[in-house]
Image (cartoon, rainbow, N blue to C red; front, side, top):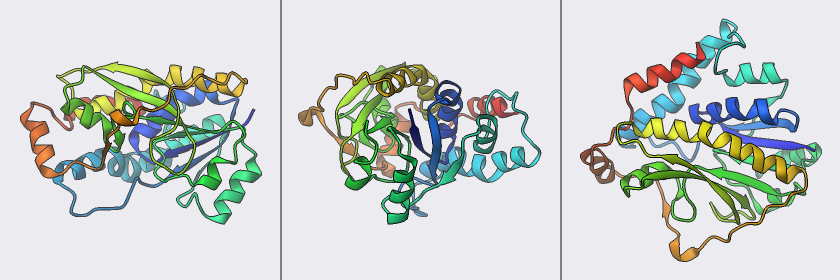
Length: 268
């Protein structure tokens, strides 16, 4: 069985790869990676710029190149993208235009049975989703259809949810965060922890369940799916300043330095 994995070049994506590759290595043929989600916005509110720095700029431009340059030991608790590729013998290559003729042909040549997408930064087109015979499955870091779009965990915390969810669902066409729901993972909310802590914590909490679902699909156990209830649907873009201010006023932190330092220690 052949699985092709699509992800993004950021800290949470790397974390999920660290947890999934030991379990899904026998199936994964190739990993494609996008460089970012959405368009760059130099005028983004400072809180979002700070979040981007700790999720993307610091690991991708400073930490990971330093570790790769000095030869990160494979005994570290968490490995860089390059370290994971070397340890598991799976190529990780950029693909930022998934709708191009060249990209579509590259996927066809791999003949995947299933495509798994986790945090990939581009929208798959209708032609793409027809390629893998078992379909395209996406893990969304929010409960669907309630929190479609970006930063779903931010929205859940703002709504006072006691649990945040990851949703595993099929991608049937070019629409965003639609398709039949395979199921949900759960993580209890901790009011003492930051937004980034909740984002990063959801992935290791979800990895065993995602693995079991993907293995079942690859073995021919097509899961029963739940249709998304459009009456409950809401799509969210990046929060604006007034929403970010309300988040802080409610007592939430975006990033906690001590939490982040403890997390980064796992790469050393």
